[in-house]
Length: 115
Length: 111
Image (tube, rainbow over all chains, first blue to last red; front, side, top):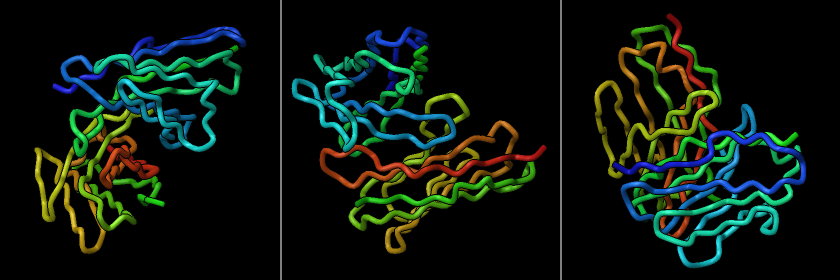
């Protein structure tokens, strides 16, 4: 149980393109999902907390207008990287939890490469 | 500021030995504790959850929690080369917050 699906797994695109990443909880409902970014050999960095039916909460230093998060249902959150640039190239990972004190389960991640 | 501290390593352990990974946390009211394993280029996967003081065993893995000392550890018995990965300690402090992750310990099991 507690499977999180993330799609796509890999994106390569030109600078200026907007990229949408989907995160789905397959066998449970997730009122809260989390978006992380990880650069090579660096630790996980929380970008934002996504709450179903309300605005996402962004961590300090993360641009809300650049990283658009939508959590339209209890099983789907999306992250859109708008007008992506090479410095946005990274490994983006979503996670979701069954309950407030339960572990987070991670998707397989999306490797984004902006040329 | 909630903090979770781990030795970054690398921690090198011979195959078949016990690997011991340690983690300390700053928030005394933390409630739930988790260990994740992350292979290079992959996303983290949950290995163990522990909620109360003492030991919790699952196969070759044992998690140990000492809330008084604000310390949680992970023991891996009969270490295998496939256990080579980065191990992340994560702590839940309550409320709407997500987990606070340590930076991870890089474990190398030497054949």
